[in-house]
Image (cartoon, rainbow, N blue to C red):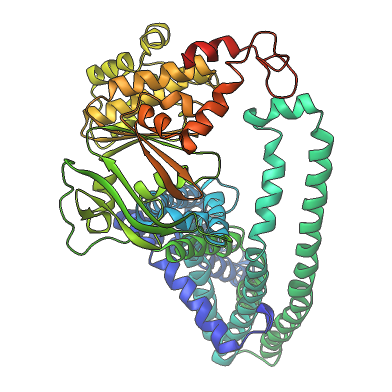
Length: 638
């Protein structure tokens, strides 16, 4: 059954549930603000009807005033009432807009907080990789980026409907009094039927639009890729703008063609039918007027009021600019938020969390098996590994060996499929995730570079504590970033996109990231992890970086992830991972003496730097070109 032809009872229930969900957001705006908004909209609904009645009374009294030789006193009171209603209504209009904006911002603030909580606290990190969750997240974010109406807009639109329905109720009362009750009932049925049908068609279209979230994400990526600073320079160099323009046009036209076709199907014919319903209902009310008015009713007054008040229910079949798009798409944004919360769920937490132990033994992976969803094979199959406390461990292996997955499991970004990870014998699943993560200081391979000040970039290592500027300075000095601190200053934004901001080189950012980790250690973290953060550095800078790291973290539980064997030779313990399993474990000298996989790969990586000077392949990058960093590499390997 298509969205436009669903069971009527189920449709009513679904739509009622959405309205209730939006109404439940009203408390987020605060009682006083909601009360003020309701009062303003109620007044704006009733004042136009008061104006209609007053002007109709004035018109009906004109013949009497003229017959009395210009006795305008019988007309003037009604005119004054009408004028007062008009003036007050026009005075309140700006307040309606201002109050609606205040409601929108208050509710959106609450919803943004929910979204941030879901993405950074409640949701298991692994759930954020699922396409369906990302589609819901994209729709929720686009609302808060003002690309579409937000939940706050929906609440403000709901409040705005108070004016419309108050005006309808008042107009129906007038019709019942001056004409006949059944005429008012007919007008009411016509208004509700047209309104329900019009919103039903819009809801069916929005439901279809919602299902195209994936197409919107692709189109949005192509639209923004060429205008973002990070990608613009390469696209300019490659001359790829025409390709992006053509690809975006093809994606957008394909998306819009489907959308427009469905829009015509869902909105065109229903509009014709609803227009016929309005014509029949309105004609019935005029028929009641044509057959005569109740005895004792002024005919001129009845005609003036009927014509004016009948327009109110007939207008219920048209678009309400202050409400319709806001509530319909704002409801969709709220559904995207609630669906995202439901799809991602909550990160598993123990009923009675145990205290996070101070490491004295280490972190142990015991028979850990793990595979990514949809992957052909598991990354780990019953992995056993010990990361000794208060010592440095290097985890090395070729690309694809499963090194980064180790960090994700350690940080509980993912959970093992079987087996368990222990900290001093305590399973990580028995610990509160947030408390455990505060014991970790991780420098990821793709660590974040925040467009914040230098001090803030470092202090985010322990964001749960107030910034300690002395500790920030100490961390930067220990990380070898004293010259950055002296040149930039702690209060300078690390982005040239801001006035007075400064860009840093890749190597400088590495030191800032290390300082962030060291700041976390000062705040209580006791496990430091480096996940190949030196990919942009030459071999000399990389060796110096790791040497500094290992020296600074002496006596601290530290883990270094690398695919370059030569850079981690000074670690206390070296673990070689291949095909998701630990194949060797020991220090550099013992592993070389063993002559196993570590020795083989170490010598293989070092071989081209130890060749004779007359070797045509010496100091080569592997494709015949000279390697200008070879002297640096040879020095680092010695």
